[in-house]
Length: 171
Image 1: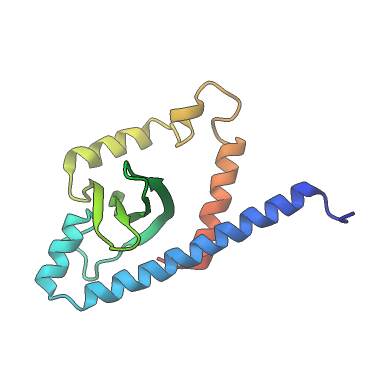
Image 2: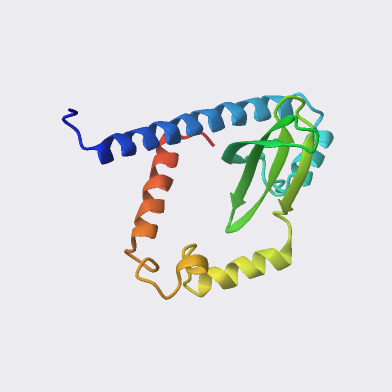
């Protein structure tokens, strides 16, 4: 019989997966950054703009890989398709932009992209209004429950995750 309760093993396993994904995100960030450096400045800026993370005022263009997941699905012919879901983000001066890409793991071909441009004025105003309302991320799902608001379990969990991400310094 284990000297640790099953719950502690589950937490340790989840933390190990979390840290593995942080490491993989750091590796993908490095690969993307290196690939972008090989492009001409004009092409690099165009690529960053297409990804929604270009900031014309910045001396150095920066972004973070804040999401990396994998999915397998079976197509109509019964073949398994492996995809990765990659989310990029850039923030500066209260503005946030980025994109989420879904691409084939084997070919790298992008199947789908959702972009939220850093330069969008209407999006920037909507974000400012949301922040000014005092509603947090949990509000969209948990409003009116004890799990929403300052000091809630949801907020504490995500504050902890944000601190771990900052400590890792992968952006």
